[in-house]
Length: 555
Image 1: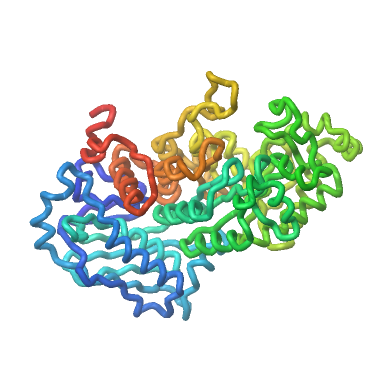
Image 2: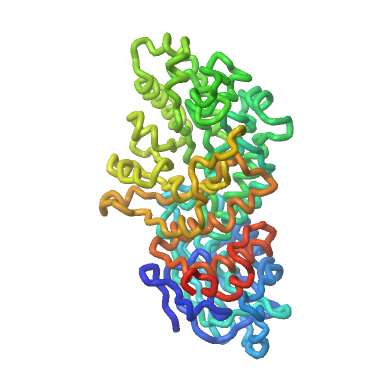
């Protein structure tokens, strides 16, 4: 049998054939055999041994059973598995998968409850045993989340040949749990609007690779699609049109859908920058609104920032963010804090008056204390971009989470300061890079974060590079990000998948994976995504996908 551990080199090229398991993310511990096994026509999933079965776990079981019937993914080899016909035909049949709870609770909590629990308390581990002699497979976990993650893995085991779901590598033994608690994806819905169904499809795909956090950058200077109770005028005047909004009902639909798939939704309203859109409803709170040239006053058009030194603006912002935060069940809420433009405040007479001898950073500190304090009052922990800590030296609560985006080199400084952090650096994880300049009248322009970030680039990232053992404990995990200046409903899937899956494995299984060995499994995932209705981008010509290793640079 073949044994795999995260500390070892992944499957060698000799194993990359129709007989290999193409699981993504790769389990932390995996052993396989060489015996063909097929699913019985009357295959079932049993929950009789569970103390209770939450409704969302029942739904997850039904989805898994549906995928076993509808994926119909043929092995990625030149004959698409035809040469295995005899072996599959004579294989023993697996009749059932039994779910077993190894904890002590008298009732299982729902997936939704566990998905939004404190991030460091979440339990997602499981063991999965698939015998070679037919009979019964067993999935064990001491949490509902763990059972759900195991179901996701079980659904990736099988190929299809002439109506039969099969594997050639039984028996299979898996012991698995994530290395990092936070495995995320950020979606910007302000530059361009995405209908609810697009977000739900993205959540589905995230769950298939065990991503457990949607960082929802819901508003920005360009539009305000979020309908916030008590502040409805913001979306009425700030959305692109009356239909391009997310009502409280939409938010509940999205957060419920996410939680039932093991995903926490962290909303962001960026402040004090990136807030020009608020001027359409509350002009008294915005400095340098649509000032020109925009390049002097903002990183993107339109210019406009909250008058952070104004007591009225501080109170307004605190009220707005707490009202918005109440829409989201997550324990986290992001207040942003990136790309604050000094010229905007320097040339704004109202701000200069309100500063009253303070520096902008001193005013920012007071602004942040007030806003974060208000969020704490409604049970939220603040999330910020790295500038708040590293550039502006704002006093942050000890439990604040810092998103490191400007450079992965800045991680050490955040950890050294003793703050929990999430890797989000543009040099590895930005999905919008490399598409050329989106601003007009710039024919030779490139994107600011060139080059294009390939899956291999992010897969090769080391989350603990240059950190001491003491500093490593501050790394919660990481995320890919999609800023949507050049993305919309027509190309959403292609922008995200399968590249974001590289981060899913990196932060589940751990660093040190071999891109040569990972590529065939990622091909498999891309094909499976397409089968499930997600338009993931091909990674290579199909000729290469069917012949692992043949298109490597040194082949």
